[in-house]
Length: 138
Image 1 (tube, rainbow, N blue to C red):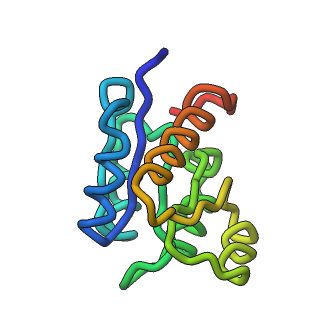
Image 2: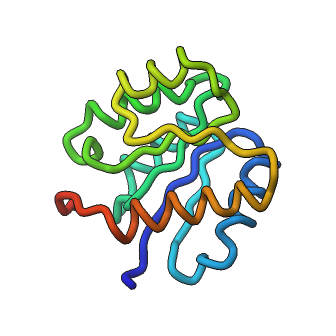
């Protein structure tokens, strides 16, 4: 399996820690970069020598919410084809609908149970970094 790059965008340190813990078994296969805000994520994407293979994006963040980040990602030629999975606590139908309207590749509600959360993260990363095929980026 090829080494894959993941950008995790979440402003909640506990959720970041939980996600990194869920990815722990796969961290040898994945290079995970964490952005604590939407602004930081866009800066990382703009200046990255190598773009991520997958973006895990929280919806509810201060300053710049996930939808605004998603709009910016989809607006740029270099980043528009990167799979973006909304990984959030909101199960509201309005949030799901808006995320897809803004170009989300998938929408996953963070399970409360850690075992289920770990399984969800593994399924997401397996699909988007191993099974899914997409155009080559820079």
